[in-house]
Length: 66
Length: 253
Image 1 (tube, each protein chain N blue to C red):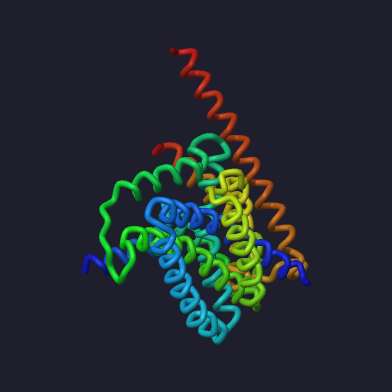
Image 2: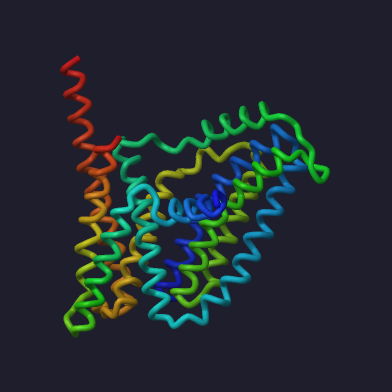
């Protein structure tokens, strides 16, 4: 069990890293892009708008917790 | 070679280069402290595991439909890239200590010299596992980048060429100097890799989600410029903020 937990923790640290909120917000932005695209609305702009906001939020969180 | 292909080779080269520099530090520390035999055995064993991983996962990825692949790979690269970029911006703005290969090397060397000698399968076990784990963990990131970049761009071999070039360069210099490559501008390279991973992540995940980029593949250059721009703006803003905080603390003292 502990090996399984260690394996899971390794992949969590590897992909998600220090700030899980980044993964959640990126997933939400990609989901919103898919919704717009499915409704035939231009959606290419959404990620370039969302990503800097997510990064800035994550930087502020890192500085606050330092 | 198209814009996407050039980015692919360059990104794989830079990202792999950073990881190989870190792996070299560990292999050198293991070799100097515990002998070259266990260190090189660990390096060889980890290389075999990584090669098998690429051989198994590489062909498997090519059977996944491109749009679904780009969605998943794009999302992963975006999350992964933002991690790199976040650390690089925090380092560049002074909020996080710079990566210091010399200090890491000294720490690894001291730990390795202090560990007890236990022999297994004819080699010093500490030296072997130190080298094996180091190369495997750093190498997994290289494998991840080569496979994801390569498969989403439609050419795993091209990504592998970028990684192989970095390996030859780092190994060649490492053998020549037999010291950690402290002069490599590692933080600047990590910043560049973060920018590239984020750029590809934005581009592919939007495409995978069904969005159409104006200008098709040429939009990649626009996304790259945009990511560089906002990253540099963030560094500047945070540097200024940190300077004013330090100044306020000094005035108070």
